[in-house]
Amino acid sequence: MKNNTLSKEAETRLIDFFNHIIDPEDMAKILRQVNCILAVAVMRQHETLQIGLANFEDNYYWLNELAEILNPYLSEE
Image (cartoon, rainbow, N blue to C red; front, top):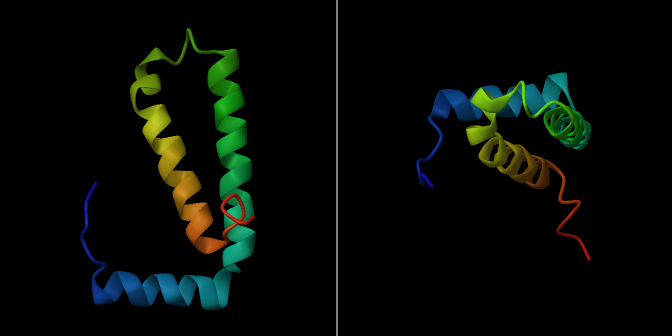
């Protein structure tokens, strides 16, 4: 895992994105929905998606981590 910090430009663009374009909670919901759809598609057609399966587990994890940062849902008790 990398411990890089965001550039000021990237930080400014993310802040602008979440302040003016989409609410972080809405984005988290979208990420979770897309992750679910992708997971179901992979499970249903895994034979045809062998190329992408190697990275799928990691990508699924990182999208969920981003969703949790935007709106802690799974980690709430």
